[in-house]
Length: 87
Image 1 (cartoon, rainbow, N blue to C red):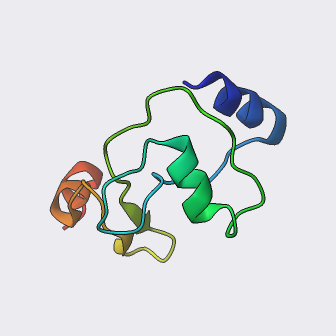
Image 2 (image 1 turned 180 degrees about the vertical axis):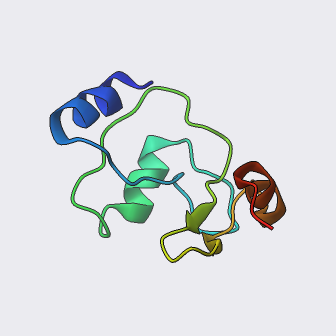
Image 3 (image 1 turned 90 degrees about the vertical axis):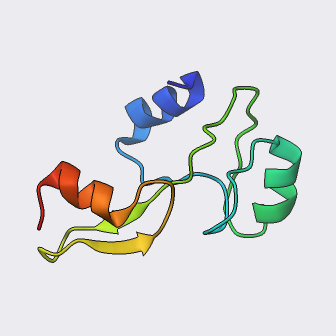
């Protein structure tokens, strides 16, 4: 519900995003650390004074009819399968 994120969604439509961290690491919450670590990998990093989630994103590919974990986060494959009612 960050105002800037809502503005970007309204202007550009849906975005694909994850938590700010490398897989297996805790999410980062400090703008300066985020900027120094990732500014060479992205076009823009928006300043943020809002508290960022402490949960790491789990990224799942469901496009081929299977449940494939692309990035493991705080939500396990078993939890995802249970929620999606996949066996």
